[in-house]
Image (cartoon, rainbow, N blue to C red; front, top):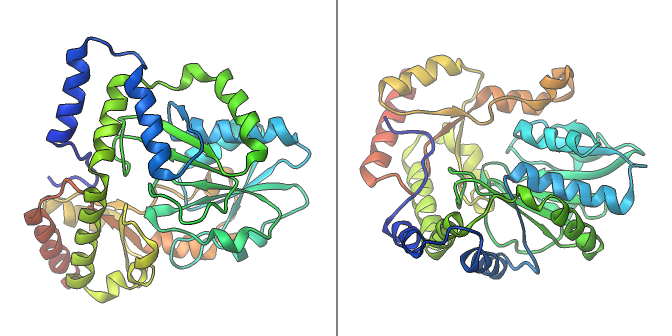
Length: 341
């Protein structure tokens, strides 16, 4: 089987990790400190706060906002087309999640956010889903605290227009330390409160020199990993049917290709399509497992584009661990499967 997602582990990772194992010291020491330094340099951050997951990193950011500004405004807007853990973190921090629609290219837009704003809205969380970057500049006049969800988009941000940002280092993310997350500040207003929150929940961070060595190894050849993702993506764009790739093609220059979504022209049976791919030895997934507003009993009528996109999107494998022959096999299989549709 060709899995939908797979960590990219090479001799580089083996060398870095073996060095730590042979040292006999596995606690968070000099290698952990080096990881922080290298990530700050790569991402252009002033400081880094490590946590056990991306969800806990987001929770820390929300706690920092609450500590600084209180809860007089307690609503946080997020797209319904996102991982449910984002909404869970909002509730854990004592805020209320308010869901917005997306545009036709999986993005959170200013119009989507404006449609759900109230006098109680404090912040918006913008998820760069699939590694497709939404336009943060369009939100800067909203008066909201802007939090960037970079769990699926690990790249230096061209402009630090948001107030806060978080990343995930889960096993199959862009860059992995097996587990863990990172929070950072762009707006100095929240720097001291985030430092205070990080100190209070430091025992959550879960980092040591072993998983830090894995992160350093990934970072050492991360540019090659990105280049591989891009090569695979443009191979797909060239060789797969245009009717499946038109939507991702339209935002290709905005994407780092963490995922490669295909968009069908109409609703389809995911179970049947997944079975066709499984019979070919390939695992596919929906774009997201669920639309989060449905967990809160909200009507689909308020999220028409998200419903359409959810019903028409499927994600095929794209990650640096894919071999050239596997990529060609995925292309051949996809063309064959959709020729029957």
